[in-house]
Length: 393
Ligand code: NZQ
Ligand code: ZN
Image 1 (cartoon, helix red, strand yellow):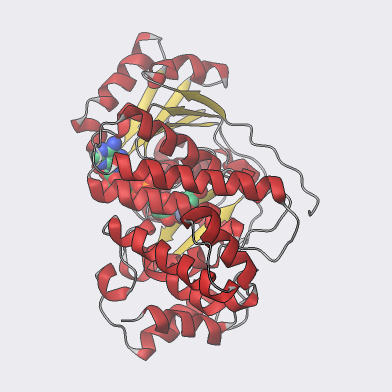
Image 2: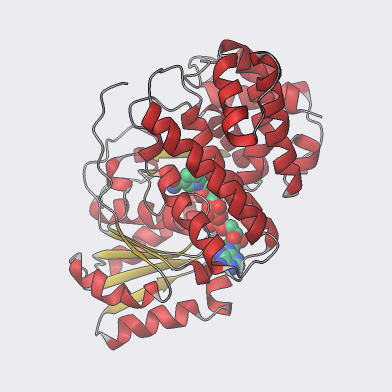
């Protein structure tokens, strides 16, 4: 087991009506003027936004609201949010929505705390992030795990580049997890969310670091639980218990707990982000479109690891290690299809790409061939192109 230091300071308020504690928690984390961020309108339609606003008003908290965050959230809207939040001297940023809204709120929080700096400079690493503003997240979809994660992903639409920023300053102060808020989700978003949750642990499970029994067992239990409850929630979208399990696993899957003692890989995420930046596809779908190709390319590095995964997750217990490994990959893709999720570019809706586009994506992913991607099987530009090609059907 590798050495580690782990702190996930986000306070979790979990359960029915969790969002009604919003004003109390804003005050607890020093907020007086709240800048509230939401997405394309689902929270207006459901009445959640009005409920949260009433909570703030009735406890005497001043606030301003910015809507319009799109999936694959844009840098330009985050910059606009920084300007507006600074204008009201906001001291607490409140996200009401999913990963895209929360990541925008994180970006605004960084901009408010560092008024002289263009926020994209934090994403490129040009300026190190050294302070931020407290963020709260009222979560409406179990997926990205941003409500507790140390990460925030933005798309710079001018560059067509989607990039993540990892920093402890990205951890929200408080997250409100009410599974009932997900009951308005379309089936497609539940499926994309479930696959993203699975992928956050899968991308930590496949690591060359040996000897992590506790972390392995936690990871396997989490993934199994998500699969079992996804099968319930996809049929009955208002099953409180199933969605509770998925929602809590979504947070734990990306708060770092399933990587303790090892180093995460996250190469499928990097390849997927390039598809998001170029084609504006849904994040979870970009991952399922690539995972099988990645897995088939790399499993021979450690067939025993893949065989263990096949056995623990999918009950595959016969055949050689290679046969079990391949069966586990197949079963994972069958699960994606069961949820109507794509396993290649055509199913993703972007069609078969030219060799030129494959090279463009690989260049974006590897800094024009100067960097390797991943850790289980560090991949250079040529390897990244091979994986894109395998999914390009
Ligand atoms: O915008 P609205 O109208 O709210 O609709 C959203 C959006 O269209 C809808 N939705 C959300 N909750 C709903 C709902 N519709 C009905 N009822 C509800 N209760 O769902 C759509 C997707 O929302 P989005 O916030 O984009 O979803 P998700 O949580 O999957 O976030 C995806 C973004 O997070 C990034 C992804 O790359 C992507 O940009 N990620 C962020 C991470 C992080 N910060 O730690 C890690 C992840 O790996 C991921 O990269
Ligand atoms: Zn993800």
